[in-house]
Image 1 (cartoon, helix red, strand yellow):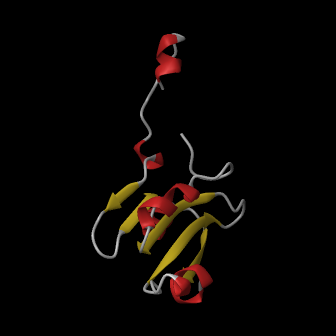
Image 2 (image 1 turned 45 degrees about the horizontal axis):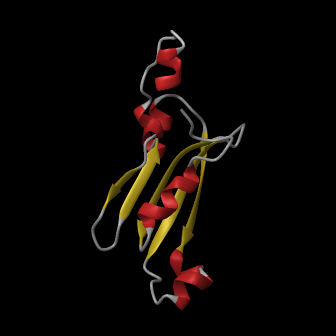
Length: 104
């Protein structure tokens, strides 16, 4: 954003690309749209969820409570939103900003 301003371009902040974290136990983190937001905008979406109980790392850390959910465009698979509840959610949420997904 700063580079755009320096270059004389109009720069607008896209708050949808900034991860949000609530540092509770368990942590809650999200970035982008919810499934309901996307559907309200007329988008066709598909979702995927993964329970921490199925993760070997979570089992090794004795932290199997929680899950991650990804919302993606049904046609392009572009990530529209990601939501995580569980240990280290605040660290993992950055993975929701992949090269084809949520971006500034």
